Length: 426
Image (cartoon, rainbow, N blue to C red; front, top):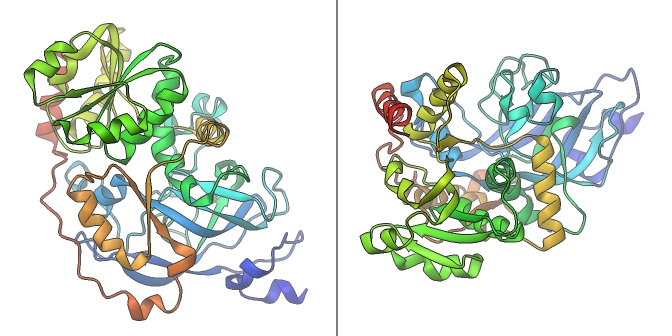
């Protein structure tokens, strides 16, 4: 048919379900990419893979900017063998409209609001995958910077690392397409698929419910989202930050008490008061200082990307062999089941992340703000529909972001030091 011979860049105006046996073309798209660890993002033309029988094509409208995007683009993990591949296109908080589906797709239909979170593939067959915890699959593939092994997460041309959501189009296997309720505004959806599930997954795993005393350390976009979700689950929420500067922000989000961690008296007054701590600080820090806040049997969950998180991953493996437990654990994102659950919870309860909608031309400025700790406690969201187009090549002239030296402590000596502390002291 004539419609199928048109470039896929026109699909936003002509939704399609390809017929069986018809070969589909690669899909023209635009993205924001950086070519090295300076994170100087500029527009770039590229192609998504042809639509497969189980694939969904999304016309992207918005994409949130996560602190993990900064860590990856700035190559903060190169010293532990996790170096970035350039050009780098981050983004795992995608939200848009389904404009075409493969012939075998049943999960979504053309016209649906659809999102993509942190993953685009896994083995589908292991024990973790079978219960919707794809984030624990040994063959999981990240939305960006991941390596396809099955063809279900292929880039184009094949062989490149996956490219994320700072883009105009996305092709994803239907398993990893998240249905966004029609009542939920798309501009808020992306951060829920990352920040939302990152906080919801440990809340659910450790049984947070009515009356559970939950502490949230760090009041950036991740922490503020955590406060809102914990409150919705009926928890009694304590916000924890260095000073009292963010107390009003925390109270507005739903916290009922506040701890200024740099104040010894504030810490002492809250000793033993928390059943569960979710620690969102994205830089290396003394996580052990917060242990005093835990009640007996409580859990301190490290979520931020730094040496402490890496150490907690290794510590978890050691404990499996030694049949021991610890009050310090880690958590990373969540699988498809919990991602769908959390967006549905947000839609039912009117929970919205605090966001600032920005054009792609300000992406470098956003990276500067994230690197400076994001004191406003909001999630930055790229307005892809309104600002990523051919004209972007003429208007994107911002200087590179101002980035401080890598503060994650992601080196093997630092990780081993944190590991020893976890294994022998906690």
